[in-house]
Length: 313
Length: 318
Image (cartoon, rainbow over all chains, first blue to last red; front, side, top):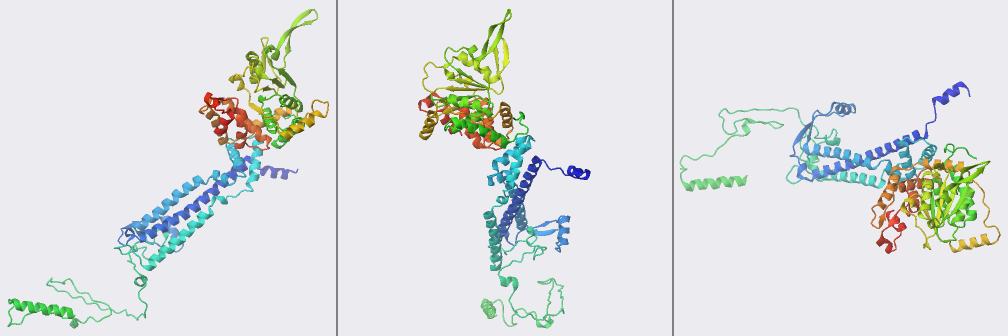
């Protein structure tokens, strides 16, 4: 063997089967982590949309809910700005919306941790009987750094068997499909509830805020946190019809009465109608000079006449 | 002949092939009894002693003699009787004339062999049985004030008869514990018995010839390899827990000692090697549990009265 070839061999020695086995176990561990992350994210999403729907249908989620200001972390604001999403800082959201988002995040964290605990290498071994006992033994042996011919043979044997195994079993397909279907159904139900105008009793309805959970990034009502009090679709969108051309001209007249009497604060009128001061005159009821208001019969007659006039109007 | 007595250079596959050759040779003489042969080989690979129990005429002695022949080991037989003395086993000093002088020379007893068949060991007196204790456990013999090492490998393969117990001396618990396994031999099936009759009645030869297919050094190398077979922590724990459970089982008066735990784990390793595996499975532990534990536990009086055997209790614990 020439010197360069010898150097190349020395530079790239074949890894010991024990090292290869430990690397394979780490890879299995990573797959378990990814599967746990994915399933926990989907579960948390389902919890989030379900809570949103529940809050929409209960007084807790009404428009009269308290608002909270949530400061955006600088990094998050920058990242969102980078993709064209500009949010006010701090974001004002409803307390119910914030609670929903926090519940979703907490669910995700707890679910991911629990699933990862269950989806370890042991789960992989249980799902792959062809390698179960051999891999378990090889892991225990490698951990104590056993290095004898039989252990090395076991490492090689397990590495060979691992080629016939799969980490797909980490993902429970039926569970995933069920959760995704659940998310779709609940989301559809949420849209349907919004479209039909169902609202909690005694409240204005929609109290969720777009910024909560990122569900409504850039959505209406997010920044101000104003409740729209949404009812039916017609309430939200208005009646169909021709839109008349408007005008930018506006007249404004302020009239003050220095006496401080009733309504003395001011009279605002504006818009496209003419504010003719002569079109509205103040009037008050009064008696004829020859009549005497002390007379009860006369008072009754006046009263009936006034009531009759109100009904006519 | 292999010189890797430390197990280096020998792999599981080669070791398995060597042991399988021994197994095939034994099959030339012994009809059926596959499980018994397997257990005996496990005992051989664990460097342990075996106690074979079965009715007369089932081939116990032939089996052990055949094993010794196939593995190229020196063999000796001790026919135990009540008048057998310890010195008849270990050897004794005799006076020999050397020229004009007379000197004491140690005459080695039958225990100085690789394979010692102690036939009907329960017919020897406790004193004589005790002479085997040191040999079985320490691999040495003290006689005439001098300790002498026994050849390696060294096995005591004892037999005893479960019937006709009059005039016998049951082995004490301490001595039973020194046997790695107690192997029970059942009568052969009808077809097997037909084969036995055909094989041993057609010729004047006492037994079909067998070849020596393994040397003592090769056996030592395989024994070293057996100890290196990895076992998972939880399987070790299961084996130890099983033995510990015998000490608290309701129907057992006495349970097994930690020596049983060691025998259980090593026996499972040997069985794994016989199957060509480089790891121990739970099935290995379960397979060797009965032969390893049955002679180490004592069934309580009430359970024994109800016909409960040690195997029944071990099966429950498994």
